[in-house]
Length: 468
View 1: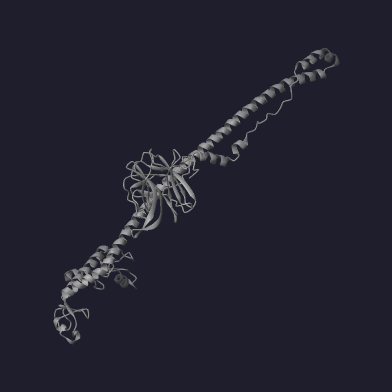
View 2: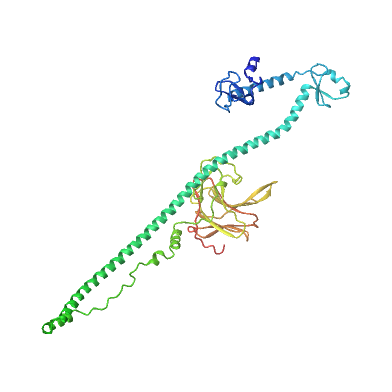
């Protein structure tokens, strides 16, 4: 850099390279601290150079000038360091060509023969520099690896943060869809029950209307006869006697009707419409909803697997850019159930259908194998048209299955140490693993096929488990 360049990058107030420069409306720049000191105690804020007034007490930063100054200082520092490589001995003004291993400092040839370095060990400056660079590189390498690892973790955290937003949006959409179905069911049920009430109201109102009309006709007929007879009774004796026979005949001709009765069940059957209303709706809702004993956890799924929106089925798909969260299973093309079991009995069924490549079982405790810890898998698998039972700690075992399996029930009796598999369609036993289970076991599914493997709901999973 020329002296002119340094002058251009110097503050007019302190004459040093700009530090945190700000720019006034007149285009003159100053160090922020220099300008504030210049204005301190003055009533009018003006430019120290052109005396033009400034309307802002806190002028904007001059970022372009700041970057230029930092670049200039960096180059200046590098130039100074380069010049320093030719530094002469401060005692003898000779080039520093040797390195004293005992004092760990560069020296000249005269220093080597001085009393200060008597019987000391020396190396040429380039050899010593190379040795020390190699030693420093050894210390630097772990830091570089640590830095690389930190960057990888940060990258994964950034990816996780983005995936959280995607998951939240997708989950919200699924929640709204589920509730929309429930709302639709409730609205339809409400409309049906209101409609039933209106029908009953119409029927019973019509029945009562007919009853009232019949009573009105009978009342009118009786009223005419009573009124005419009462008029005969009020007539004079001669007139009464003259018309007596006709009056008696009229009264006798009118049949004596039975007393009218109130209609039983005429009122609205309120109990039918309101009794245990919410419970009855809930019972009816049970016909439309289902319970699945095992729910798949998408956070454990391999990136090449696609878990359905209701978390009950899984299939192979295009690789997804998923974060490497700790829960994600290390086995390829696999996914785990969301809930683990460490006691009791548990059963669930999986529809494998026409899938040609699958595994079903449990992922459990860690064991020491080949000098390292490894998760134990108990599973039956179908591959290359062959059925096999396999445990991590035992050899594979061919299964005598003759017909294709389409629905398989997995039954775990943790306390008795049994993991059994059954053909749900024929209720026949396939295989049982016997082991003293410890820790927590998770349902495990593997597939490389685009056809889904589906966990069946309780309604679909009807099997007689007697003898399991």
